[in-house]
Length: 301
Image 1 (cartoon, helix red, strand yellow):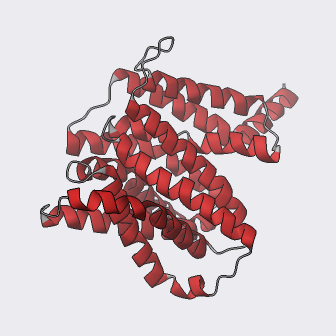
Image 2 (cartoon, helix red, strand yellow):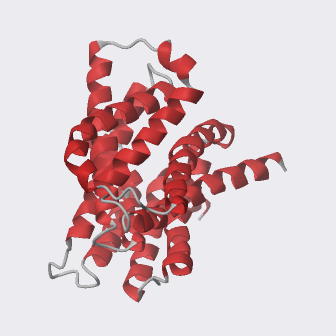
């Protein structure tokens, strides 16, 4: 019963992360993408500063740690946040969610290149299947012709920046606490975007209805604050492998919420592409287990 409760809590985190695609699509109807990014980062930094201030002020880091924090803040926060909201101006939340779903595979490929981690044939088959699924989606079913729009390119930037961010954070987590890394990367990301605010503030729409301001503030706290902290805490109780399986539901949830709130329904190409991505992800995550099962089957036969 306790384990089921943990799974339900983690699934709620995935649900909130998936809802960010729909909420982002709503917010950019009232503010420019960079405005949304700056406003939400201000809320996130204030929230994290309030609940984690003890861990933050006790943090000590080397010059190398600071450099990595700066790079992570620029890639995983400044570029990632802006490209995410900007992509929703030019493509559907469904397409953005499906492209971002490949971030774990890209992270694993980058780890292979940087740390020379071993990967077997099953992993590479899964990676190829997933990338074919992404190619199917971003080319709208025409794999041999170039039909990639600005929104798809921005979604790819969001995915790549997030994958690089995960690698840097994984390295930093060996020395720094999760609260400190989260706070400082968000603070650095905000500081990088602040100079742009001087040009956009005169054009900012301050007369937006209160419900949309509340949506902006509360979604930032719940999605980027509470959900991240709860996930990091509960994930340890069931293991990262079991928890990662729940992340595969994110594109499906985004599709459902998009249909309900935005009246945008997935196309047949998006459905086929999502199935390929899901199969590829499962092969990449469980390639070691699949190899063991195949080996045991051969021994039995």
